[in-house]
Image (cartoon, rainbow, N blue to C red):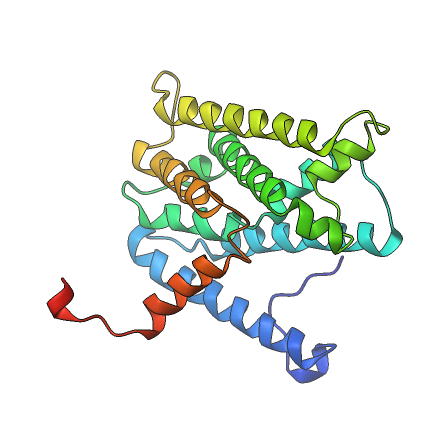
Length: 234
């Protein structure tokens, strides 16, 4: 897949929608690069670009599976799905705004990449568990439906969900171990805490249902954005 960072105008886009999305991502990455320079003393924009590129590649893979009506194995799906969960552009650039400074070596170190993978895997499984019924109705594959498909009909929906609830608990425990690990760890604790804080947010987000389509969650978000805060209520 050919990827270009700088383009010359509307002629380079296949639609107005693509141009709008590209413009938003481009300006966001540029702003992060400019602001992080003051904290890091170096240009980290190329790393942020790669984070977004990895996300877009994973989403393209899933789109091709859907278009071709492919049924990947669960391992194939998870290798892509923990990236397409899209926590990368949220948590990884934020590491550059946490003290101490993050060197290129640390930013690409296997320990940090493993923290990201475990956290994102847990988040993806939470999402797939809570959105299973909706995505099944929409004809989309997720971890739960794939697990049932590859069981050859040997598993009920309830059994599959219980399996993934166990995996979610295991991934969360594993992440906590990585965060608390001190021996042979080179990742600063404030950076590791970002991964733990995000997984706590995700557990809250998916506590009752699929947070993306929850009317209660949407109402709270709208209230925060649109309703003025009364000082008398504080």
